[in-house]
Length: 261
Image (cartoon, rainbow, N blue to C red; front, side, top):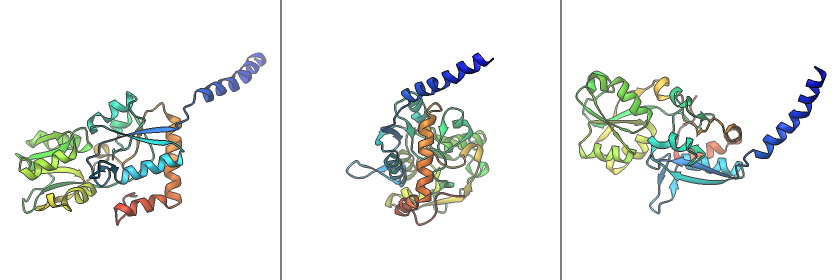
């Protein structure tokens, strides 16, 4: 027994040393993003990526002493691309849901905002299966909104149409091909309703809440094996909140708290 214990005592430091030798330095962190979801992520007129998520990601990289690389990806392909190592994290307003957590790991929460339906002003549409029967609702492909609409509304006669990005959803809503859309309420308000193309549209009914499908907030998706990166990212987020940097970034985009309880 003593010989075994002695052997293990010798082997453990060597094992830890070997792990350390191969640990990734994370001098570069690549984030996948779908830049069609202002004010969280979008493109400025000159093509530069801008938004709340972009600023948070750049600050996280700064605290990790890492170079930030942003890789554009349609939202429905985010998790497959992450697992295929096209990038190291999904930083694109991805809700943390039990279904996604089976496939990937998440950072601590970045923010939590409600979900709402948008429709023509005066349409009388409500976010219920009864009200949406026979109507056409647009959602972003691969989103929690798509899952929600197909679970609760499609079985009772709602036509749910999925799009590659949110800009396409709004284009068809404006053209009249959709009766309503479901998305993040803050994104809908600032990225659509408060813009010229959102004239004549409004929120329809109350906020929607379903933690199992819609999640418990937004986080950064990472591969489960990259535990060292998760530790670094979680610490960076905690430090940003503690020292007030998170609040400063938040105030650039919102006049209310998006972190949530």
